[in-house]
Length: 400
Image (cartoon, rainbow, N blue to C red):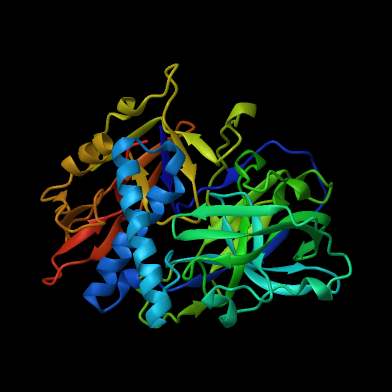
């Protein structure tokens, strides 16, 4: 069983070669439709997040999940045709994104890319990209880089919010002073409108090479083995703008992503390390040892893997929902008074639960012998009803 955890204040660590410096990258956060004053926008956001979760974890879905995903794609194809005809604007889709600057080529061309620990490929849009959003942001011009190389091998990748395609290439890639020459990446020539939007021009995957659609070594792994890091660690700090009435669409104080170290000012106490075995290097996964809701234990053994292993939780900065098996979702919300499934009559919202907005939900997850709390702010996705009294919970039921 694979559980996807999004935007939790956890530090990821893996045993990698020892190296000599570290890098702090400022992250940018984009505001979400989740908190729009328009009820229809908030409801559309819920549906988009459910679709994203199903699409991102397609290989692990059960039959019901695959049926829902098939319906999602049929609906998306119809929306794409209508969009092409009506030239309607398409939202980013992921809503709250975290991104950072990156440079590609010689001389360097600068882009803002999404930082995603739930995927492994680096890609940017090519000049001349046919997607509508390519005209709204910066695109890569291969003819302006004399270190650019390609054999035009085909590349394609699927995300929860859509697909992208193009070809593979190699060039010099840098961020914050760290540089990898002949780094493999993808030049995207076509993509579903709404996959990304201004100011982002692509995505930097930060998971392991085993799930890379390009079958290449991710940028971070190349850095980790290059002898340029001070410590074999990566650290993530995500700023919070939820509930901030003065927050702008683009906030430049979005947090930090650290290569080669951690920021000790962002946590108290000692770091807790969990071993990652050689056969477990795909997503950034942690065994879930226990869980409580309102102080009451949740039976996580229902999701035990073959061989009696604890269910694995994927730490994913590119996903907003917390996806769990449907029976675990039912057990979680059974501990929250007044909670219920979102009516399945609302197509696209299968998997969501709702509960009274004035309920303060105390959730704790146990990793490596230590309990970590999920704040009520992160647990409550906000109200998606006319009366404003019922809110949606962050835990999303999805079987794999």
